[in-house]
Image 1 (cartoon, rainbow, N blue to C red):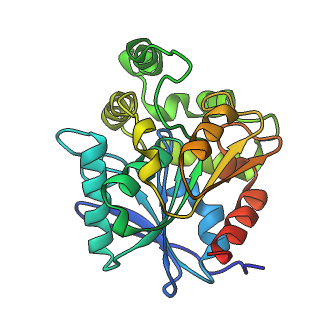
Image 2: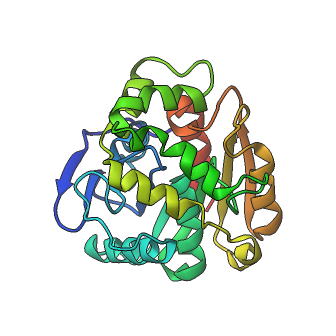
Image 3: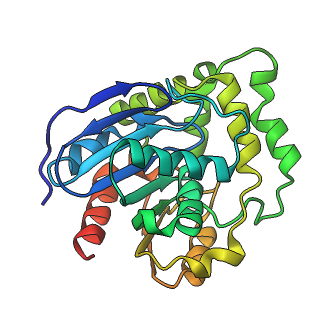
Length: 267
C-alpha cells in the first residue's frame, strides 16, 4: 500500500516549470494532456511521493514553461530529455495522459535510454484511426479560441464532454484549474502538433515495460486504440477502468493509482 505523502512544491523557472513531491527513489515524470497542466496530477503526486520522486511538468508553452518556436513531437522529446537533464536524472518512469501519452511513446522511440517504463493512459498510436480529418478536428477544437475565448472559459464544458458521468467534486475542480492555466497560443500549437502523431509502424521498437490504461466509456481514444497499442508493443499490458471516460487519472484516481502501483512494483 502506498502512503499519502507530503504537499508538492511548484518550480517556476526558465525554460521549464513543474510541480514536484518526494525527493528519494526513482523518478516518475507525469506528462499531461492537451487540456491539462502540472496541476492535473495532484492525486498521483500525493499517492506516489512516499516511494518515488514525482515530477509533473508543464509542457512547452503551458504554465510558466517557455514556448517553442516550432512545437513538434521531436521538439517535445528534446524538451523532455533536456528537462530530465535539468532534474539530473538519466531515466524516468513516464506516465502520460492522452497527448502526454503520445509524447511518452515518442520518447520511448527516439530516446529509449531515458525510459524506465511507460504508463500510457487514454491515448492512441496514431491520430485519425477512425478516419477523423485533421483540419476539421483542429477547426472544431479552436472554434472558441477563434472568437476570442480562452481555455479557462470553456474548460468545464470540454472536461464534462469527455469524461464519465461520475466526474464531480474536487477531482473535477482540479481538472478545471489545470485546464485554465493554458494560454490560447499553447492550446492552438498543441492541437496542430497532436494531429501529426503516428507511431504505428514504430511501436514494435518499444521494449520498455508498458501499461496501457483506458476508460471503459472512453470515446476520444476508445478501448480499440489501447488494444492497437498493446498488439504492436512487445512488452505491453492492457487495463480497462470501469465507469471512466477520457481522464482516468482524475476520474478514478484510486483505481488508476492502484493499477500503476502494482505495475511499478512488478518491474
